[in-house]
Image (cartoon, rainbow, N blue to C red; front, side, top):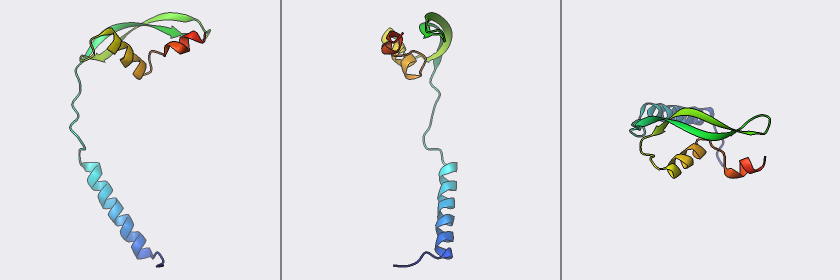
Length: 90
């Protein structure tokens, strides 16, 4: 088995640096911002005293989300709306 020499380590580092530079400057995919709509959203919020209050905020929601079920799933996925079981624990 060959031993690792300083030259081979330096060569590997040079290749890694070159690849890192190439990938850092290369756009991986064309990301276009999705149109959003600023909508008022009312949802239950758990307070520090373990009570449930209603909170109203204006959120930028993607315009492709139109139904109530999609809005609920979106709010749950971004962490604003908790799962129902979280509210039932109180």
